[in-house]
Amino acid sequence: MTPPPAPAATVPAPAVTPAAGPAPAAGPVRGGLLVLAGMLLVALNLRAAVTSLGALLDEIRVGLGLSGAMAGLVTTLPTIAFAGLGALTPWLVRRWAAPRVLVLAMLALTAGQVLRAVTGSAAVFVLTSALALAGIAVANILLPMLVKQHFPHRTGLVTGAYTMALTVGTTVAAASAVPVAHAFGSWRAGLGIWAGLAALAVLPWVPLALRARAARRAAPPAVAVAAPARVQPGRTRLGWAMAVYFGAQSLSGYAIMGWLAQLFRDAGYRPEAAGLLLAGVTALGVPVALTMPALAGRLATLRPLVLSLTVFSAVAYAGLALAPRGLAPLWVLLLALGQGAFPLILTTIGLRARTAEGTVALSAFAQSTGYVIAALGPLLVGILYEATGGWTAPIGFLLVALAVQTSAGMVIARPRYIEDER
Image (cartoon, rainbow, N blue to C red; front, side, top):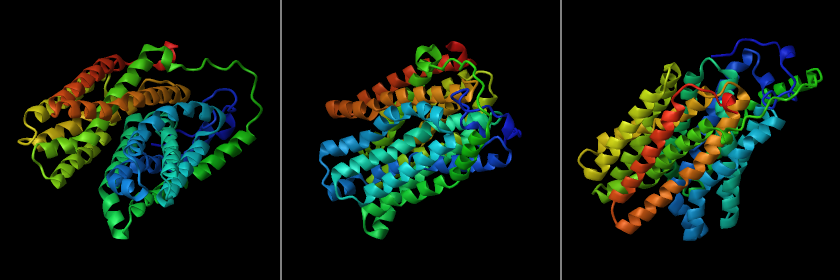
């Protein structure tokens, strides 16, 4: 999975192109495994700070005296941070090598998680949560670029590996936050323990950042050449289709995470059973996350995958509306398969760009714009549920979102490149 060797002296100076900065850190073969290990450790952290908070929200509200509005802000903060702060990532990597940016991102995540676990102030809790989420937002954007840059011939395999790591981190944090809090007698332990995992993710990137810095200093002065035109996905049909697909699938994913347990409780399941069914969606998503990118990388067109995922989700939604109790395990399985749209879109970001610059630009636009769309999911599902007192209208809304997702998916399914659509 390591890239072919490239002598450091042949690497262009960072000033020539915006994407050149990170290249020296992984040119040598010996850096390939270190980059991969660093990516997997980062991926483990991409949702742990979010799902551990959700699992302990009631305890945190009582402990800090959070108002309902403040608690609502805390639960909405991830999508706000991912949308707003993720958009700054291309600017960061034009100025600093990607390993250096990731070191800073993981340090921000570590510090934010430690500080919010020890504070007694609601306002400080929100601010330090935002600091932690800023680190996640930047890492979200960088990982597809790093796959493209360091593993261009293993895009599907490496994307599958880090997506699986992300899913594992999400599941473990959600499942263990409450037991850890109970074991230590405080919600602060269940929330703060994940700072250790974030600190661990810093370690592989430190030598890579130092290597990139040394290579930049040793490189000859840049030859004065015209910089290539900057990739601007927001001005292309492909860029907007990617953003809509990412947003629609994230909207459904966040709505499922936020409301599926309540749907099963309303259907007559005990709270413990409803929670296990929700956890089943995430757990069953682990093999999907591993296999989906590899499959996408082998296909000439993504249309069969886009349509298959639509069918899985549509049947699951129909089943939840008509028979939520009788065949609940089947609907959970189909939902997990349908959520394969997430690893699919992450893989497609790399497949639809020729260069590292194009990948980071497309990743930033698709994810930052997509998370704005995603923020509407849990909110609108909650409004419809409260207004109608049932699940027919919320599920109908999710089916509409699925139709939008499928339409965008058909646009991105055909092989094309964002650099060609400037």
